[in-house]
Image 1 (cartoon, rainbow, N blue to C red):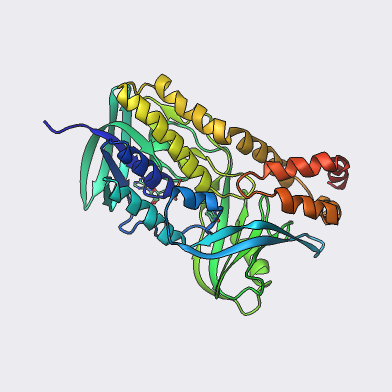
Image 2: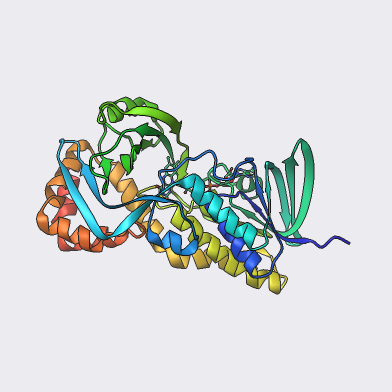
Length: 381
Ligand SMILES: Cc1cc2nc3c(=O)[nH]c(=O)nc-3n(C[C@H](O)[C@H](O)[C@H](O)COP(=O)(O)OP(=O)(O)OC[C@H]3O[C@@H](n4cnc5c(N)ncnc54)[C@H](O)[C@@H]3O)c2cc1C
């Protein structure tokens, strides 16, 4: 008799590969299914992450590191903030390959060109239908982990819930060398986005220039953005959805969702690599106990949601509220923010407590030190 697979993980992005790696290291049999033939392609990412990410995934994909950001306001003014520790700019394709390589090295059975088309699950286990090389097969397993991104099939089939807010993005790789290779540019206001912001990230001779919008056509804003970089030649276009509100429920009988599939993404920046890895690690910890005790009921797997929420829940909930508030602000209100945050004492505070993974720390400190700011923002609305 063929032994039942312990876990089928759907999607070899960072969250899926890392969850697979951790589970395999704990001694479980893991099949990792990736619909594309080439892990890491197509790239839909700017590749800005903290060093924390590289403590989890060993990868040589760093292409640059930045310490600051120029934040541009609608009135044409900008502030520059900077931190002592660097934020890494990575080659996302290589990063995903390194993460998948770690998984394979730990014994994971990675199958590429394997597109999952259906999933069923009960408390006794899960059945995954997969199209591989023109054939439709089924895989039976004890648990399925949906790590299949923003348009997750596992979520659609088993959870019946969609992320509450999805930002559409449009990003290009441009042959343009940004003058300041040590800072990203962030553009705020109605000229560049509706409901999010625009950005440019230096990566040597290339720049990644893009923007996000909510319920609008992202390309409509792009012409103005690209005109800020005279002579920039577009080499490639990418983009995709970013789910910035996590699901109410990320577990059920014999199934979990991690990373973008669960909407576990930082709402203020749209960064989801770090949060995806944290959720993957919470998933592996929960599954270790659940598989060992042979209890994959929803009740047992609810520990997963408590585990990732302990690490990220307060941060993501707070950031989501700030994001919603921020996107309601008019250009006038954003300019009022500029007048407050451009004060040297506020810039110094941002520089000392700013953290790309935990932005609530800086938001709360700035507001606590300047309580009049909230009132001024609201007046400027
Ligand atoms: C334009 C843009 C810029 C971004 N910039 C940043 C950034 O600078 N920093 C940051 O931290 N985050 C950034 N993000 C977000 C980041 O890309 C995601 O949060 C991250 O990729 C989530 O990882 P994941 O493994 O959960 O999902 P994904 O990376 O989406 O991986 C899902 C995987 O599942 C596979 N898959 C999907 N469906 C199936 C199926 N049915 N069967 C089999 N396989 C399937 C996909 O091919 C893919 O490989 C950006 C996103 C966008 C769109």
